[in-house]
Length: 445
Image 1 (cartoon, one colour):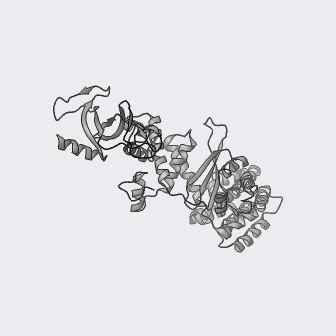
Image 2 (cartoon, helix red, strand yellow):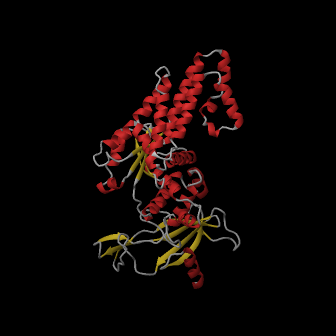
Image 3 (cartoon, helix red, strand yellow):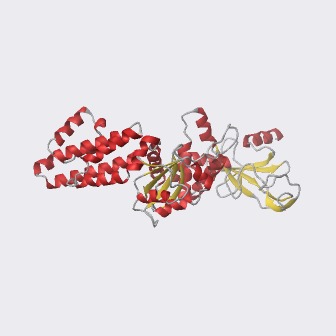
């Protein structure tokens, strides 16, 4: 029996602790003995009673403490299931008198954090499954409430975040995200601040006003602001104004995301298409019905059949054809190799969109001219702005899995873990599976 207890203690994996008893119990907590050595009820729970062998440690500083101030009540911690049976660890922790902290605190436990009723490894598995499964599915799988699943996942992700080494913020991405109509928040938008070098989000705040960005800038120290070399923002004026009003950041280069520039150009194309077909006759309306996606698609992304169809469509109206050609030229300008080439190309686009008779293209002209310096700066710095839109895709994926979030801090943790933990390499797989647990992995995150 002594060897069996030592073997079970080794399986549990907590050095300095021994198993003094184990037994089965019903879901109602009634202890029972199986009717035979080969049959155990499927809903039975396995409970391990453990005892500390060595001197206890302070839960705050980790120092060994000889004096026991109080023996507390017996507590239970949910552990990983064994053969589909839930497992609980039973122990009555002591309140120790620490000579270093000079106060009484509950002893340090190797399997769980303070105020938690699940072991760290159980929370780790819950958090890993919640990355690819809806919260409700994980809750049903482990027989927990969805509040318990989210709390366990948040604790695991918070431990992972604390084990990460700080990353110097040099390139900042600012973007807004629409929350949708079905929510109870006062603001319909949130502002996401991300690190362009790693692609991970750093801060989420309600609103898309200038005060929203200023509230994030207020959290940065003078050293953090001095390390920032570039801002990549969309064409939302309050974002740019918040950066220019900061004394330490007002001379920091700011570039606009090519995605939003192209989106604004496509909006002008769509507005011109709608205005043209509204005044057209039945024949031209029939020709253009159902061709919006083809009209807004880049020429190089069209197949030869689609290009031929687009040529037939544009042959009926020269105004639409010229506007379509200008937007394709703008797409090529945004991929210019240097600042001079981008400036020359952008000036040519501005010349072709300067006619006031064409109202939608004139609006595009005024917008490009207003943001001329931020657009041309793309040719000088070439930041990886595509990671901003990749962050939006991860956002949408998480919302589809969990059907929405009420806590933006919890959503921020999930986004950071999903983005900065690639599993394309062996080391990435180790870091993903470790999730803040130091052993047996080389590095947790």
